[in-house]
Length: 250
Ligand code: PGA
Image (tube, rainbow, N blue to C red; front, side, top):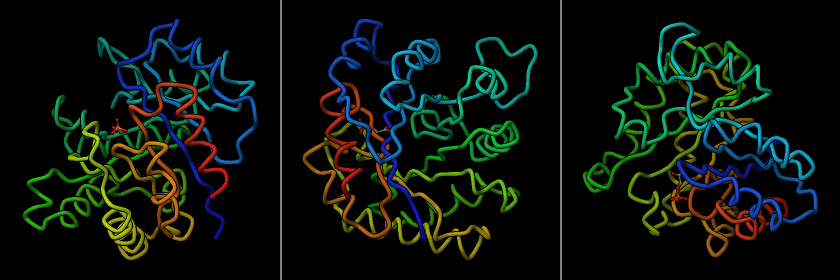
């Protein structure tokens, strides 16, 4: 079992060009042993690729289209991302599901297309507060995973990372406790092995939802947490640097 920790910044619809330059000036120069990935807004991908290469930052996308090419105004295809030298994309983030109405079926289509273009997919899932309080966390997360990753063969699944992000913890400052997160991560790993024919020991499972330097260690200490998908705390070089440092020493 050789899972490598991943620290992935999801910049969402944030950061100006000046902010990105400032980020790079304050991000540590030391090379981290964890995978250090950032998903900026599409238009900033080339800029961050240029500035981030020397610091080992792998630049990806926050979303991609469900179609290969053609009359889909405003969309960006996996092939276009690949052409830009991008090699990963987030898919199914809870903001895409809640604000843009993305369904498991659309997410499944996008995932298959992105994988067919050779992109790694960071597949996001997670329950709302109501679903957790009704004791439905595992049903919800399980069905998002089984439907979203339906009919994908074992070979392609090697290029999938799962990010468990409880919706109630995203951007709220409320983090799942390490025990709550570990409980769901352990469930995801057994589900992957039993139902998806995944090489489950190799599956990277990230936690997301108010990860910050102050709580990252206790999360990373859990057996089934292999890093973080981080919004707010990934926006400054100091803070994201501290998270990458923790993920490199854990
Ligand atoms: P947050 O966002 O770290 O700001 O909670 C995480 C995410 O939405 O990926």
